[in-house]
Image 1 (cartoon, rainbow, N blue to C red):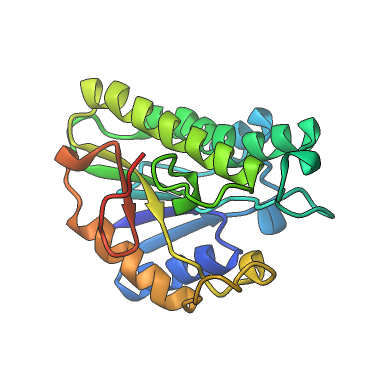
Image 2: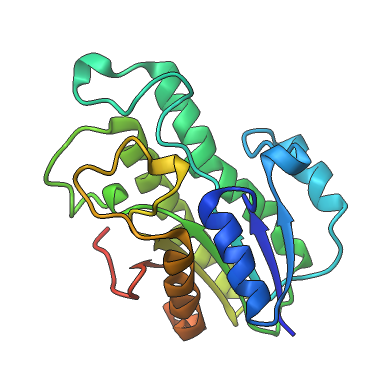
Length: 221
């Protein structure tokens, strides 16, 4: 039986991933801000909560993310850019997942396969950026991609069967995206979760450091 840890398990896509993983026969452990008080911008909060979680995991899924700070919206122009908002998104979307990996790595096996995947976004691709706007969200997801790529290189030296990757779930029909779906058709969270788990099932350690979409296709950096 696989053992799966889902960070952000109370959110739309996190809950769907938990349900799909359970249905596939996995033992699922979930952590979230609403249920457990997890604050990924606070390293002490991460360390404290993970102390209460025993053992290693076959798969770790980080689904935390923020489009814009509460009470604001993604920037449409340079005039809307605010330093505090940029810093907040960087803390949640980029630093938080890396801190989770930092604190989870010591418990993971060196000689057995396991996966760490964080939800990124196609808009974090520099090569695929043709519309502009959304400075904070784009930049923080691009930073996440670089952090995961860098961590994958380091971790591969000691954990040769580990796979670390960034995944784009598509535009998922959740509260997270409710106000920003006009350009793209949304898919139900359960459908996105099924696709993501299928992608993960097909990855091997040779793929570590990759950036894939929900269909398993590589996304340009």
